[in-house]
Image (cartoon, rainbow, N blue to C red; front, side, top):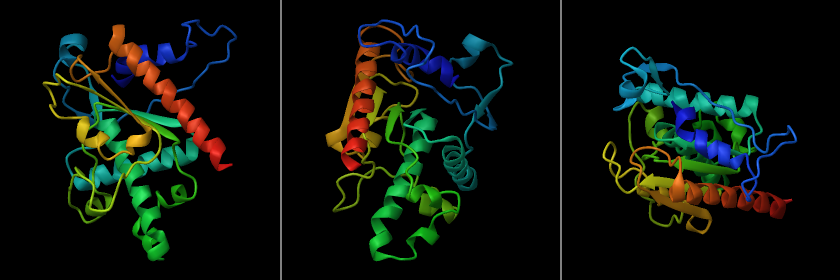
Length: 241
């Protein structure tokens, strides 16, 4: 399902900025697609396209243990299959990626004042403190991320606003793309965007509902934003070397 959502985006990113397809058999970008593991009822509209018998999967169910396991699984995947330049997440996938990035940022922020902070993280996440999993992120219709510390206590708490004194939780270059007319999950997008560093945050608001633009001006603006974000991430890396 995710591949279907982002097919047009991936295709356009495989072309240069003049819309010339790369013909040298060397892909401009490579993508890994991670399947969900939890059998889940299809979202509205899925059965209309794929039929009633289609099997759909989620990254996690509604329990804290399942969400925590999914965050750990993403951390392990990033560490064992990377390095990755960036992560693209749609809806629940964006929530999952943002939860991981915020957990790592919080641990790094508290490390100078709390020598035991790393031990508070799940084992799967600790190696990523020294080697961040992604240099940029693309959040498509992303919802509110979870508080990892609460998940470890068996509780679910959403992160909807920054605490006093914090300017951003997600500081890497990002794209936040959402719909002004999302009837399935109204409000998804802006609150996640508000947790990101405004100086490196590309915001794209479209009109295709809870989905990803596949054509026209909305798609063009999304592709332009992703390209700008990838370039910004590269410049940030060069500045740090």
